[in-house]
Amino acid sequence: MSSSAFLLLDQEPINTIGINVLEPLLKTQGLDVTTGTNILDIPEGTRLLFIETSSKDAWGKLKEQLVNLRVKCDIILFNLDENPELANRALLSGIRGVFYTTDNADVLMKGIRLLMEDQLWYRRDIMCNALNRMLQFNKDALHKLTEGDIEPVKLTKREKAIISLMSNGSKNKEIAEELSISPHTVKTHLYSAFRKTKCRNRIELLSWAQQNIPDEIR
Image 1 (cartoon, rainbow, N blue to C red):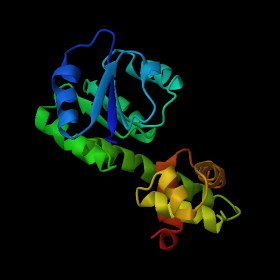
Image 2: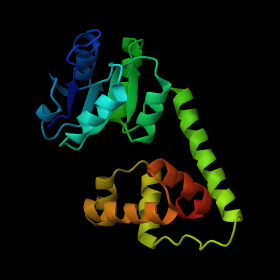
Image 3: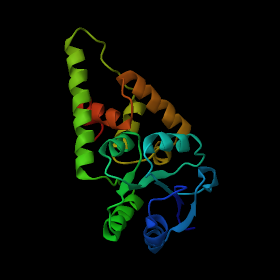
């Protein structure tokens, strides 16, 4: 069965890039594509969810939509204006990529192909900004360590194994299959690692691991 994509269109789109450009390009990659304006209409089995994000309160509207998302899929934003802060928030929130109103068909196609290979699609400046935030997080963490005696973080072998697989780009389901455990158990171990390391998301956790246990996640 072929993979599928869903284009969640804005009620009042600023252009027709979703229907006229993005949809045909997705179909050339063998994806079954459906479109709609209601997030509740997204069918089970959808692999890629493209959300049109062009309104003034784009982040607020996006959060409202995702609260009602009932399907597990990779999320990509499209039709963005030049909004670096929104793109940064998207990256740090686990959204797989963003496309802008100024992106041409060649850029869209390149991004689609990488997304289908489970890679991220962000501009270099956005990736650099996220990296700088992680480095600042590590600097702050190091400063705290020098303020006084703090108990060292002790992760379990299972937690370290999950972080190692996650650093290679594996998703929860793939990690579960590799370790012969359930996806729910993977989430439980991840939440435990977040709590122990005081990390807020996967990016911070991977950064923490690279700084503190590099030899154990290779």
